[in-house]
Length: 318
Ligand code: 0JX
Ligand code: SF4
Image 1: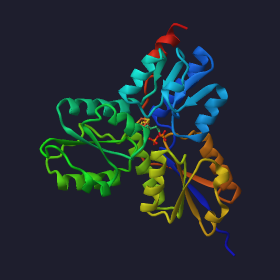
Image 2: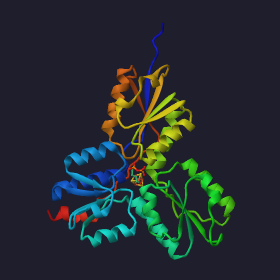
Image 3: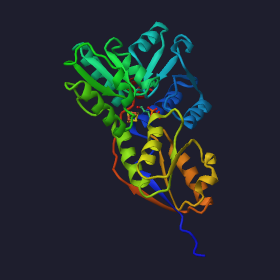
Image 4: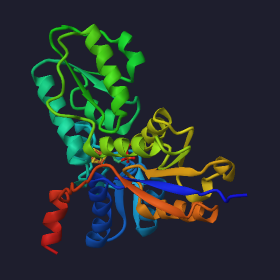
């Protein structure tokens, strides 16, 4: 019998985006500069391993601002916070470091601007996601959530001539296009955001997974269950040629049954996933005979963001 060639197609770009890199570094450097504990409101990024590693170094993750002791340092996560959270922190005399990704802040600014011009803002995003809570909080009386194309029928607006759509940064590009088409069919005067709200990293990871999915029977996406952008990669892989796609936090979650009869496995990871977890997956696949790894680069990324200014100031004065 001719031995079966088993190979891995590794998507590029994958893993950390510039906003996650900045947010994780913010907590690491705050721990070094000020010492433990450093409080972090919500998960700094939606990744089990990142949170566990930072906890081991002295970060304390809390769900609500009021859980932070008066006067302590608190870091706000990459997903952003509503203005009311800044007010709560000020009320407790907390020292805040805002690790909100600049591309999320950009959407907050758009929401403020359109609200001040009295538009109805249709925010496409996933109900309950922290980013959507933060963005809506900029103008709660002007923002309505649209959670996918099926939600469009439920929308009512004050003036169909004055409607704009904005979105969460980590959505499926294709599904969002379908949602916008459905919205435009109802509100022909609908205005587009001034620039893409779905960020470069989300878009690029979806382009890259489409390329490998077309040539793979199985696509493994490394990422956590509450990571929107990671979960979207699973859906995109299934929609673009993979027979199956699964999300795993760690290599040991790969079920050997998934690999039966498979010759090409695609691998990628969400924007909140450290590369060491992908390395673990590649090692496990190699142990099952998938030891040929080919990296498929779809888009080159060079984005880098400066650290939050309040941290840079204190690092300079150290
Ligand atoms: O759930 P998301 O994809 O929005 O967040 P995650 O996994 O932490 O990814 C990076 C942070 C994204 C902020 O926009
Ligand atoms: Fe920023 Fe995009 Fe990364 Fe979110 S996924 S942190 S918006 S670069």
